[in-house]
Picture 1 (tube, helix red, strand yellow):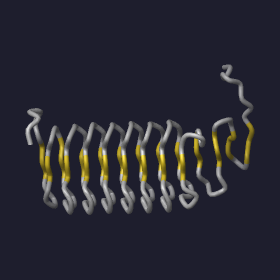
Picture 2 (cartoon, helix red, strand yellow):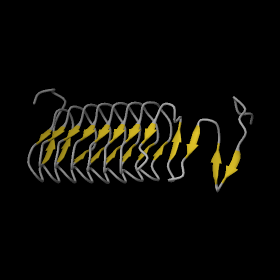
Picture 3 (cartoon, one colour):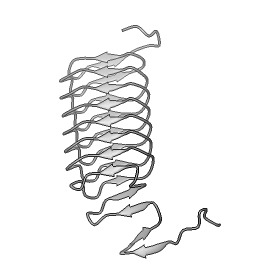
Length: 171
Protein backbone atom coordinates (compact mmCIF):
# COMPACT_ATOMS: atom_id res chain seq x y z
CA UNK A 1 0.00 0.00 0.00
CA UNK A 2 1.34 3.41 -0.93
CA UNK A 3 0.65 6.23 1.52
CA UNK A 4 -0.23 9.59 0.06
CA UNK A 5 1.52 11.85 0.62
CA UNK A 6 4.54 9.61 1.13
CA UNK A 7 6.00 10.30 4.57
CA UNK A 8 8.86 8.48 6.24
CA UNK A 9 7.94 6.47 9.34
CA UNK A 10 10.67 6.49 11.97
CA UNK A 11 10.84 4.73 15.35
CA UNK A 12 11.28 7.27 18.18
CA UNK A 13 11.83 5.82 21.65
CA UNK A 14 9.23 3.12 21.21
CA UNK A 15 6.75 5.34 19.38
CA UNK A 16 6.09 6.24 15.77
CA UNK A 17 6.82 9.68 14.42
CA UNK A 18 5.07 10.74 11.22
CA UNK A 19 4.32 14.12 9.71
CA UNK A 20 1.49 15.87 11.57
CA UNK A 21 2.01 13.86 14.76
CA UNK A 22 3.60 15.36 17.85
CA UNK A 23 4.92 13.05 20.59
CA UNK A 24 5.69 15.28 23.57
CA UNK A 25 8.13 14.59 26.43
CA UNK A 26 5.26 14.43 28.96
CA UNK A 27 3.76 11.46 27.08
CA UNK A 28 1.03 13.47 25.36
CA UNK A 29 0.32 12.86 21.70
CA UNK A 30 -1.30 15.34 19.33
CA UNK A 31 -2.25 14.70 15.72
CA UNK A 32 -2.30 18.01 13.89
CA UNK A 33 -0.70 20.13 16.65
CA UNK A 34 -1.24 23.17 14.43
CA UNK A 35 -5.01 22.73 14.83
CA UNK A 36 -5.39 21.12 18.30
CA UNK A 37 -4.05 22.02 21.76
CA UNK A 38 -3.08 20.13 24.92
CA UNK A 39 -1.91 22.22 27.90
CA UNK A 40 1.64 21.48 29.03
CA UNK A 41 0.47 20.24 32.46
CA UNK A 42 -1.83 17.56 30.97
CA UNK A 43 0.68 14.74 30.60
CA UNK A 44 -0.27 11.57 28.72
CA UNK A 45 -3.31 13.28 27.16
CA UNK A 46 -4.20 12.44 23.56
CA UNK A 47 -5.88 14.31 20.72
CA UNK A 48 -6.10 11.92 17.79
CA UNK A 49 -7.15 14.30 15.05
CA UNK A 50 -9.87 16.66 14.00
CA UNK A 51 -9.55 20.39 14.45
CA UNK A 52 -9.86 23.02 17.19
CA UNK A 53 -9.96 20.43 19.99
CA UNK A 54 -8.60 21.51 23.38
CA UNK A 55 -7.49 19.82 26.61
CA UNK A 56 -6.82 22.36 29.38
CA UNK A 57 -4.46 22.35 32.37
CA UNK A 58 -3.96 19.45 34.77
CA UNK A 59 -6.09 16.98 32.82
CA UNK A 60 -3.72 14.05 32.34
CA UNK A 61 -4.92 10.99 30.46
CA UNK A 62 -7.76 12.98 28.88
CA UNK A 63 -8.60 11.87 25.34
CA UNK A 64 -10.27 13.37 22.28
CA UNK A 65 -9.86 10.95 19.35
CA UNK A 66 -11.23 13.41 16.79
CA UNK A 67 -14.06 15.72 15.91
CA UNK A 68 -14.18 19.49 15.97
CA UNK A 69 -14.35 22.23 18.64
CA UNK A 70 -14.44 19.79 21.58
CA UNK A 71 -13.05 20.94 24.95
CA UNK A 72 -11.97 19.20 28.15
CA UNK A 73 -11.58 21.55 31.13
CA UNK A 74 -9.02 21.99 33.89
CA UNK A 75 -8.61 19.17 36.44
CA UNK A 76 -10.73 16.87 34.27
CA UNK A 77 -8.35 13.93 34.26
CA UNK A 78 -9.20 10.56 32.72
CA UNK A 79 -12.03 12.08 30.66
CA UNK A 80 -13.03 11.25 27.08
CA UNK A 81 -14.87 13.08 24.34
CA UNK A 82 -15.18 10.50 21.57
CA UNK A 83 -15.71 12.96 18.74
CA UNK A 84 -18.54 14.96 17.29
CA UNK A 85 -18.66 18.73 17.43
CA UNK A 86 -18.86 21.44 20.10
CA UNK A 87 -18.94 19.06 23.07
CA UNK A 88 -17.57 20.14 26.45
CA UNK A 89 -16.52 18.54 29.73
CA UNK A 90 -16.11 21.21 32.42
CA UNK A 91 -13.51 21.84 35.09
CA UNK A 92 -13.18 19.29 37.91
CA UNK A 93 -15.34 16.74 36.08
CA UNK A 94 -12.87 13.86 36.14
CA UNK A 95 -13.70 10.37 34.80
CA UNK A 96 -16.51 11.84 32.65
CA UNK A 97 -17.40 10.76 29.10
CA UNK A 98 -19.19 12.23 26.10
CA UNK A 99 -19.23 9.60 23.37
CA UNK A 100 -20.02 12.02 20.54
CA UNK A 101 -22.86 14.03 19.08
CA UNK A 102 -23.11 17.82 19.03
CA UNK A 103 -23.57 20.59 21.62
CA UNK A 104 -23.42 18.17 24.57
CA UNK A 105 -22.11 19.49 27.89
CA UNK A 106 -21.02 18.05 31.21
CA UNK A 107 -20.57 21.09 33.45
CA UNK A 108 -18.39 21.80 36.50
CA UNK A 109 -17.90 19.23 39.26
CA UNK A 110 -19.92 16.52 37.51
CA UNK A 111 -17.40 13.71 37.85
CA UNK A 112 -18.12 10.25 36.49
CA UNK A 113 -21.08 11.53 34.47
CA UNK A 114 -21.76 10.37 30.92
CA UNK A 115 -23.55 11.48 27.77
CA UNK A 116 -23.84 8.79 25.12
CA UNK A 117 -24.31 11.19 22.22
CA UNK A 118 -27.21 12.98 20.63
CA UNK A 119 -27.80 16.71 20.42
CA UNK A 120 -27.82 19.50 23.00
CA UNK A 121 -27.82 17.32 26.13
CA UNK A 122 -26.63 18.86 29.40
CA UNK A 123 -25.47 17.67 32.81
CA UNK A 124 -25.39 20.71 35.11
CA UNK A 125 -22.89 21.70 37.82
CA UNK A 126 -22.42 19.45 40.84
CA UNK A 127 -24.25 16.46 39.32
CA UNK A 128 -21.81 13.55 39.60
CA UNK A 129 -22.73 10.07 38.35
CA UNK A 130 -25.44 11.47 36.07
CA UNK A 131 -26.30 9.77 32.76
CA UNK A 132 -27.90 10.84 29.50
CA UNK A 133 -27.70 7.89 27.10
CA UNK A 134 -28.54 10.02 24.06
CA UNK A 135 -31.50 11.77 22.51
CA UNK A 136 -31.83 15.52 22.29
CA UNK A 137 -32.39 18.52 24.52
CA UNK A 138 -32.22 16.49 27.74
CA UNK A 139 -31.18 18.16 30.99
CA UNK A 140 -29.92 16.96 34.34
CA UNK A 141 -30.20 19.88 36.76
CA UNK A 142 -27.71 21.31 39.26
CA UNK A 143 -27.03 19.00 42.17
CA UNK A 144 -28.93 16.08 40.60
CA UNK A 145 -26.38 13.37 41.40
CA UNK A 146 -27.12 9.88 40.08
CA UNK A 147 -29.92 11.18 37.83
CA UNK A 148 -30.89 9.71 34.43
CA UNK A 149 -32.59 11.56 31.56
CA UNK A 150 -33.37 10.10 28.13
CA UNK A 151 -35.50 10.74 25.09
CA UNK A 152 -36.38 14.26 23.96
CA UNK A 153 -36.49 17.15 26.42
CA UNK A 154 -36.36 14.95 29.54
CA UNK A 155 -35.70 17.08 32.66
CA UNK A 156 -34.14 15.34 35.68
CA UNK A 157 -33.82 18.02 38.34
CA UNK A 158 -33.50 15.99 41.56
CA UNK A 159 -30.89 13.50 42.82
CA UNK A 160 -31.49 9.91 41.80
CA UNK A 161 -34.48 10.48 39.49
CA UNK A 162 -35.11 8.53 36.28
CA UNK A 163 -36.86 10.54 33.56
CA UNK A 164 -37.86 9.12 30.19
CA UNK A 165 -39.50 11.49 27.71
CA UNK A 166 -41.33 10.84 24.46
CA UNK A 167 -40.89 12.70 21.16
CA UNK A 168 -43.58 15.36 21.56
CA UNK A 169 -41.09 18.21 21.99
CA UNK A 170 -42.84 19.56 25.10
CA UNK A 171 -41.19 20.19 28.48
